[in-house]
Every structure is written in structure tokens, then in C-alpha cells.
Image (cartoon, rainbow, N blue to C red; front, top):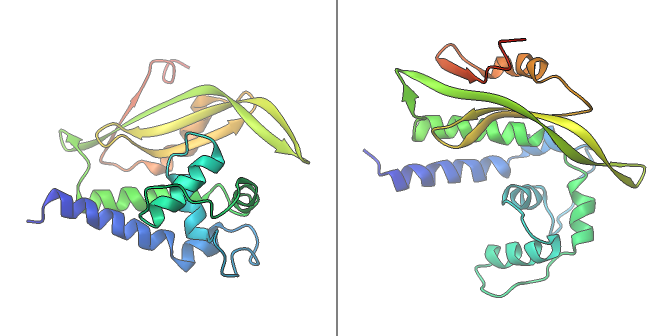
Length: 195
């Protein structure tokens, strides 16, 4: 039986191959002309950076990210924050659903998701959020609703959706119901069934 470290390694390697796949790029770029030339900010590099959990200033995080790619301790300025900002708008936001589905599939195959009485536990809930929108070069703050189906055993979202305006969490649950399978146990707070 393979060790847990090997199983995690298998998941990471499979996900890395998927991020570099032509199929994912074709589905995710907003224009067929995007990411056709060989540049520093390739599709897999931008996607990997977006998935890396950026928490600080973009330029600082980019410098650290490129240093990590080259296994160096000191920061490297390979690209500017402006170049990254322009490149990230060439990728559809739907890419994150695609990558998440692929990750969950590999985790279920290699590691298995914890179960209760044979059922996969899925928690569903929503909340109001403030979103920064950009329209015609002008940024504004608007209200929105976030809804997610969450796998508590592995601390990952099965599905996550954002809706601008005063959306309905219950409607967003109905729109996410296809993500569930017959072996799931859906946990909701009392606000969902009482409506």
C-alpha cells in the first residue's frame, strides 16, 4: 500500500499536469489568441500564482513566487504587477471550478474523503459579501452573495459561487445541487429548510 506522502505527491503531480494541459487552457482563456506566444506569464504560471494564496502586495508576492519557481531564497523581479494584472483578465473565472473538480477527483481517487456512516458529508451555506467590480476602467464596491458546498473532512469547497446583488442563498443551493451525489449527506443551517 502506498504511503500517504506518495498519495499526496500523486495528487500534486496530477494537478500540475492538468494545469499545464492544452485542454484546460482552451476551455479557460477568453480569446483563442491569448497565451499563444511563449512569454514569462504563461497560462499555467498565472493560474498557479492565482491558486497560491496571494495574501500580500501583488508585486512582492510575484517576486517571491518566481524565486520559489527557481528554488532561490532571494526575491526575483521577473514580471511587473501591471503585466500580471493585464494577463489575469484573459482567463475566465470558470477555470477555478474546473481545477477544483479535478483536484477533488484526484483526492477521492488517491486519498479518499472522510465519510460518516458511508456518506460523504457536505455542508452548504451562504453569506453576504462586498465585491470589487471593474467596469469600463472604473472600480466600485457592490454587495453580493457567496454560497458554497464544503467538504469538512478535507477542508475544501466542492462548489463555490458568487452572485452580484441581493441574491437568494436558497436559489444558489438549488443551482449547486447537481454537484451532489446520492452518497452525500447535505448539512444546512435552519435558514434553508424553514423558507
